[in-house]
Amino acid sequence: MMKRSVLLALIPVFALIAVGCSDDDDSADSATTSVVTDGGDSSEETAPPPSSIDPEDLEVEVFGEGTATITLDNGEVFEEGVACTLEPQIAAGQEILFTATAFDGSIDVTQFGPDGPNPDLASVGIYETETFDAIWLADSRSAELTLTLDGSTISGIGHFQPGEDLGAGLVAGSIEVNC
Image (cartoon, rainbow, N blue to C red; front, side):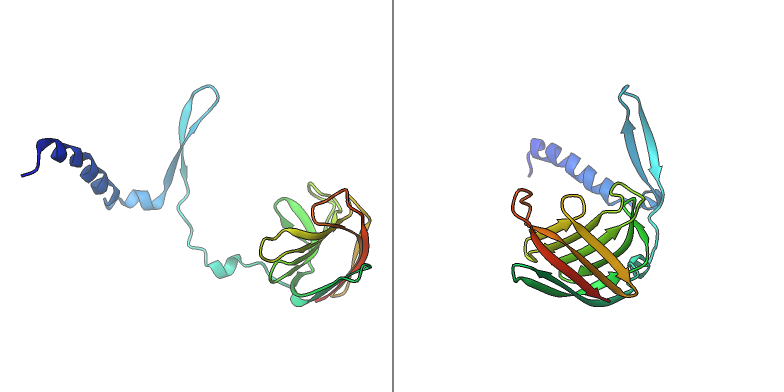
């Protein structure tokens, strides 16, 4: 026979299990969040029910696929297959005019628009695919970089810095993405 103290200790556990397993239809329809303000006041907000959006509908429309080639004046050449989006779009509050990103994440070429926190920024990155550490970076804020879009071809010239080292010497290079 179980000791009374062990039995009493198990009662709250069983109560939690019973509450967690209850079939409360309202809990599936909404979630409640408590919000406490600086003044110590609290209120509850009810989140809308989860939607039944088809994940297929959430995919970004890709203009096409192609190849990006970045050639540095030091002799290094990087070439990867990329997904291209050549129509303007808004992402995270920033207008993106066109972008090409390698399927493995190793190359990113993006021209931002005038609206947003990084107006008219041109950016090119070459990354290590295992750690996503930057190998070479170029952007129009820290060095000369110009990107243009002509039909389905992104081209550009600029100066690349090694990795995240802003103080290192710059290496000139060219970018060509055929989508």
